Length: 402
Ligand SMILES: [Zn+2]
Image (cartoon, rainbow, N blue to C red):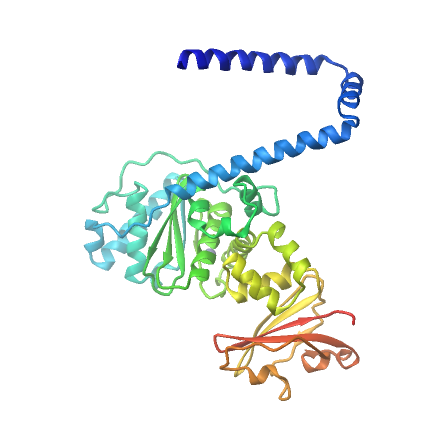
């Protein structure tokens, strides 16, 4: 039966070769004339073929993602001798690994907090990764390394995360919910461990990596952290960098840039433009939209609002106030940097009454000088809408003609 099947397959392949050869030898005009005769319109025929290829591409991608998701297992920390060592010995092992990697040019990737600040939990996760990747044995002895040659993969595309999602046939937000499957497809195993002062880190060796995510963080935060580490894995392979939490940037300029590109990668991976924007166009730039999309994409309301402002179709700003005043703000790409939100909330603003309440205001038009420092601010109006998130008030300001 198998022999028959193979023979049939061989014949089919020969036939396909013959057909392709025949097509290559036929002049273009003749092919167009034949297509016109058969389908009435060659463009329509070409579109149909393209659609079939596209459908096959998406189906093949979905199969890749399904296979990657099926491989994902949540595993507990193994019992390793090295994890019982005193802290200074653990630090010495990690340092030895870094020094050897730098000397030999082996591709070691580390994105984590500075070693001096390492809590033992973080150190344990790092050692667990080094054992899993075969860099050291379970007693912390360095193994024989094969020379790695994998370099950082800065692709030509502006949106490598979105290209990855298309490669995996992702057409719905639900398909991105399990980031571990996507990580596995990129050669990254994910473990959830208690970390201290650190949301996540990644340890890579050659083209394989292990990412650790803080087990005690919220679901949306864990997903964002993992997507952020995948950003480092894409852009900073073979580098050792400091990864700060809570949106603070590293002190080193390079680290700050690395953090920004990893954050952008994460936003593109979790809320890709091609799925996010059509929904925003349908729903509008409002807090209700951010709430709906944060449910659909399983992202935090703050991350979703930032995305809405950064890539949404309307000029907008997002301002965060604590009771003590303005904490941070971001502008959409089309809003001039002349517009700066005031430090204090206006005493008459509805936003100031939201602190401590899990509520939001309805959207309304107000004079722009209620929110913005600018000499022209009194002469026009903007839309304001606020929502309380973890005892801070987030306000979405939209510059829009009536
Ligand atoms: Zn980072």
